[in-house]
Amino acid sequence: MTRALITGITGQDGLYLSELLLSKGYEVYGLIRGQNNPKFDLVRETVPGVKLLTGDLGDVSSLLRALEEAQPDEVYNLGAISFVAYSWENAMLTTDVTAKGVLNILEAVRLYSHDDPSKVRFYQASSSEMFGKVQEVPQREETLLWPRSPYGVAKVFGHYMTINYRESYGMHASSGILFNHESPRRGFEFVTRKVTHAVARISLGLQDEIVMGNLDAKRDWGFAGDYVEAMWRMLQQDTADDYVIATGETHSIHELLDVAFKRVGIDDWSKYVKQDPRFMRPAEVDLLIGDPSKAHEVLGWKPKVGFTELVEMMVDNDLAEQRANVGR
Image (cartoon, rainbow, N blue to C red; front, side):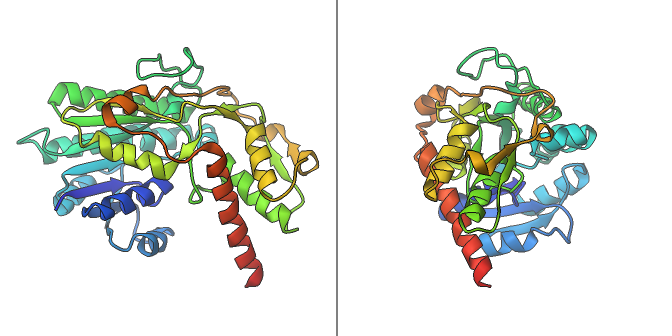
């Protein structure tokens, strides 16, 4: 039985990846920070087959203990402080977790597998935010990285450190440069879930408006459930490498609002949406669109869920949740 250890198990990617690996017969271990983590029960209820271990990306000794207990064939490092806007408010903590945490888990894996550096296959969750002030459209694996947030800078550090450990120590370490990927499990702080949650509440008369930042920003949005399959496929390759995972399509916040409101029967959403400078980024990333050709050709991976279907799925989920809450 193949064994996997996932950091960041409590996030949407961790949950979807756990479900995928369990369906393939894996023994799955999840690293969770703190014994009183508020998301402990969420993981237990969503993926009861996962064995949870306590540990911290800031503590190499705890990572080594988790590796010794899990004895994984594959390690997926999804752990990070992943909300971009927060990274300006707390750049140091973002750096400690999202950047140095990658170095810590890489070093722990290297020490654990010292007799055979390639015996544990490692996945690093890199991000399209690394491209930031984009130097090429669409963005490919070789596109110059120009991050525009402390989060993006931290992800660049982790990305290059993963490459360095692969080249320096012969580790089977791959990075997935994932463009925006969403789902009904997305946190409410992210713009997609913020919109679908608010739209559901507005349609039910529970909320009057939604306050937004830049409506012109464009992103390449896909479904998280599709993207975790790409992670798994990377670690099944004989040779480790880096891959852009994206849909190859771009959509604006305007379009996100169009689809979400249309799902609840509202064609003109202008009176429900307000803009506030507080929600503008200090340094905006205006256009992200990935070129997933390499993932198509090498991994045989393509996304299954399109943009409209994704947004409608999220609105439907939030409608069901809000109706249930009203019923209670």
